[in-house]
Length: 442
Ligand SMILES: [Zn+2]
Image (cartoon, rainbow, N blue to C red):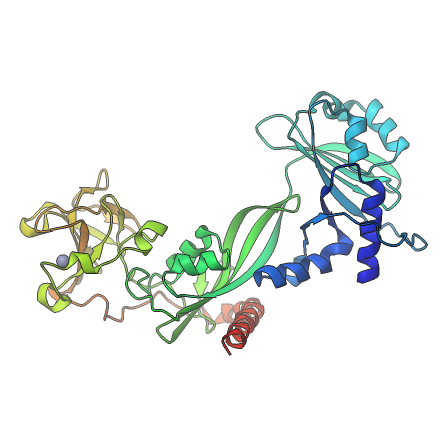
């Protein structure tokens, strides 16, 4: 690997201009990048889809490059931002393209003319070349709202040019962390995007109340998609597999799609969706760090007032914890603004002290689990903004935090084999991350 790296650096040195920073991607640097990402962030791209990338400062000229066994597959990818005053020639030169034939083609071809007419400063242009600077691919963002690209490619010695939609590639990321204060503090510590933290909270929403149940020492591992545009992170995708150890109890979830539906399942193929969410509050960076102790001056414990109080800012969104029908919307004594939902006949959930109701919410209306039904307030018998939440079975109060609630049906037997095949690599990854965690704790 070292000699390869040396050769890349030498090559870059040979074609560099006086700008010290280059962004570059190459098939040969994949291993180097993979290693540096693991070392720096504890993450690893999926072995099937390695798309390495890194920023490198080329400052020193290493040994002269050995070009004796260059092959077509040893391609270099470089990116350059268009500068004011650039010409196609100056741009190609900075991209390391030294190819008269390519330049002649670009000049005479009608559909490559946007390259000459749309040299808007700031656009990022990518070129793939072989080691002697011959152009293999050139990617140029076209003007317009669709983000389409002009792509010039050399295939079997012939150039072809055409317009393409941006080609996003997916990188599979793996991260794990331990909760010391809050979920977001932990996810920040391992540089996990908020959207992934929120997906984790949603996935385990039937098992864990992320507003009240988290404990110091809880751990999570997650395998998720990152969408790349030309090798650079663009946005996060879906959580593919995740594990959460809460208060010593381990939960895992693996994404699975089949013709009969899609969702998250345990390693054993049980659907992790539950009839009720553990928390009626929408999980966010704001609600995750809220202290509850301030909001118990009236009701000290669940036993005293038969509900659970969630302190949160006025206006925080409140979700229906289960599929149901609206039984009551309006004002009711100490509850202030109240919503009551009825589920499967014998269950009701009650949401009190609301600041307001979701627009259009009416008695008799059907709602689905997770639908927003109202907003946190302090109406009625409340000294501070909080949600008062009750769970009743046949109108008898139950502690919603203590109840084991029925889950959605498991996978059909005929799908289990497919699920197992799909899930095994993810279970392996989750196990491996758990192993890494334990090793670090020793
Ligand atoms: Zn209360």
